[in-house]
Amino acid sequence: MKLSKTLVSLLGFLFLFSLLAATASAAKLQTLTGTVSDAMCGATHMMEGDAAACLRKCVEKGSKYALVVGDKVYTLDSSNPAALKELDKLAAQKATVRGTVDGDTITVTSVTAAK
Image 1 (cartoon, one colour):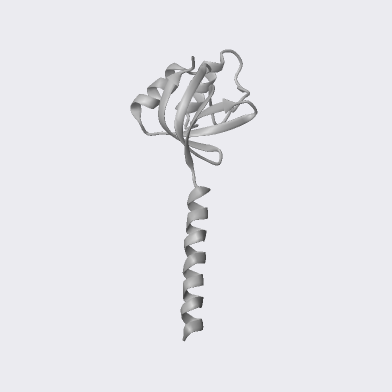
Image 2 (tube, one colour):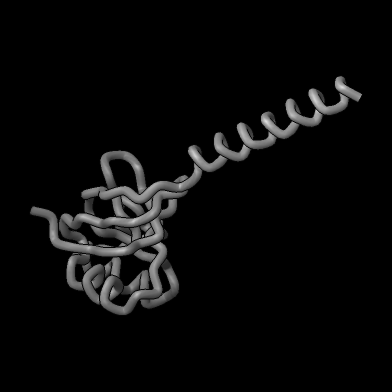
């Protein structure tokens, strides 16, 4: 009986530890600065001419906005009209994006022009 209680306590501790470890590795709110692009083109726009026009055309056709930070391209996920309007305004320009980063995706909470 005593062994059973010890085993149950140990399993409970391991479960709690696993839960805390999973929470610690979950997505975190971050602020990143980079160039506004689109997920289809990434860092290199495929259409000739203006990068901002290419970006807007790709978004119009269903691509999501993206943020290019160094060699990394993050897809920007947002349904907030104000954030989407600011991303359109800052097309192909430097921007600071705040949001929850999960792998290659940022769930956007705010967008501002980079300083």
